[in-house]
Image 1 (cartoon, rainbow, N blue to C red):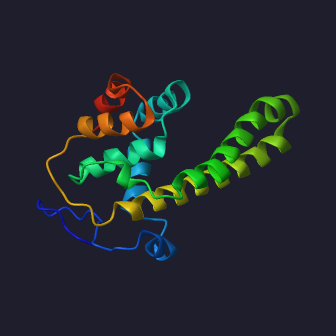
Image 2: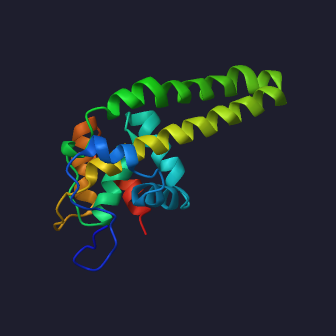
Length: 176
């Protein structure tokens, strides 16, 4: 792992092959740790879910962009591995849809046994999200540091997702 100019351990290094790195990369990496810590802050979960549900934002990319800004790296489309969208489409999104459908159509109407199963699906969805973040972490390695702010990275990631910059204002206001 490398250290930034200010001595912060960023977890970034100069590995060249993202695919090979992902195969050996631990799921518990600095991006995952940042995401868990930030998501647990008051108001962040609801702000992120609003971005996702009302504006179509990919929360993993938002978290990646915020984390990169925290380690002084500018976000760009190069930060997204070629197979990321496939993973999201084939694995994460179907699990999310299943979990959400089960809550309304099964758990609330049919009871505890269905809710316990829905909770298992939720855990699996979270694990799939962790894999997605590991993919994003691996693709972030070797990027050079610069002078970048969270707002700049939110504008850049927003352009990639067709989300207007002002949609990120609440989230940015929640940053430590």
